[in-house]
Amino acid sequence: MHESEEKLYEYLNALDIVFEKIEHEAFPTCEASEDFYQKHNLGVNCKNIFLRNKRGKKHYLVVLKAEKNLDIPVLAEQLEEHRKMGFASAERLKKYLNLTPGSVTPFGLIDGNAEEVSVVIDKEIFEDDFVHFHPLRNTATLKISTKDFRKFLEDRSSEFLEFYF
Image (cartoon, rainbow, N blue to C red):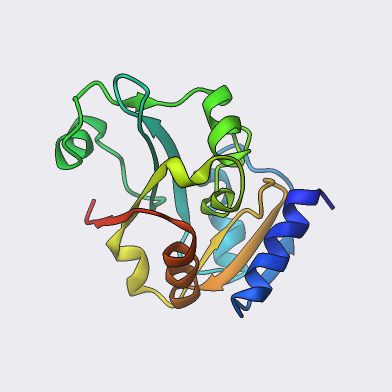
């Protein structure tokens, strides 16, 4: 087990967050994983997108239901950013969340320079009982309650915003 993943489990345990861990193959897309997650009753399937503003001075981790599409210019307007907000590079992802492409997860907020990342959450996620995310690698998934996910976000994020997408 990777050192950061071990740190994640210690962190979740310290917050009394109960989780169920499921090992699996890496899925190339959210769509490819949908059947697996439904079969194992893991709760809301989300996609996690790491963005930067036009000048690259501010970074956002966007978490929304997997079946939804993100309209970046509309989100930029809601965040009072320039419409040319875009995807952050792999280097920025590594620097701020200590993650690699294909493994983007809110659990990355425990590492890197996460205090400089604003989190944007789809409010509808909290209407379900459970949600799941990768534990810093894309060959496993952690199922947690949405109540515990909110607890995690409140503890880790200096700024987390909720929107309907």
